[in-house]
Amino acid sequence: MPRKSSIRPGTTTKEGTGASFHAHSGSGSRTHGARCRGLLGLKKRYTPPPSQTATSSQAPEEKRATAAEVATGLRKIDDTAKGVASKAAGDKAGAQALDAQIEPVWKTIEGTVKANSQDGYATFEDSFALLESSANAGDAAKAGTASTAVSKAVADYLAKYPAS
Image (cartoon, rainbow, N blue to C red):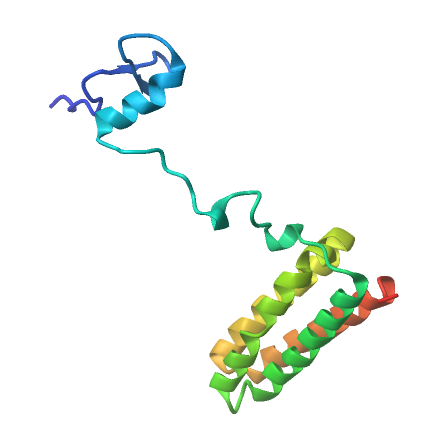
């Protein structure tokens, strides 16, 4: 049985590419968007909210913090990771709550850490993932391993990039 065409009326297929486009009578690309919106019953062009525009927000990996801010943040993360490890076996909910405190701190400094040390950045990310999964599982041994890795990564980073 032949397959039904999925191309809408007024749509043309560009040979050899499988890509489709539609054509309008008349010329001039300036009115093309308005003409299409009218055909589709749309009133105006979609504008993303400010939080989704490139100029109003940066990805955490693009933000830069001072050396002092990074040092403070890493020390706080280290203390929090130790807390997760100590609570993982007996207080799973407490370990999860502590683990949730790492990401907000990390977001403020991760761009600087990544820019300075790709290996250090990867170690932190891997350790945080292990810490989170062990907190969720209530696995104290894995949480301890992750906490130790975080502590080592913090010490290594601060030895190479001290807070002035």
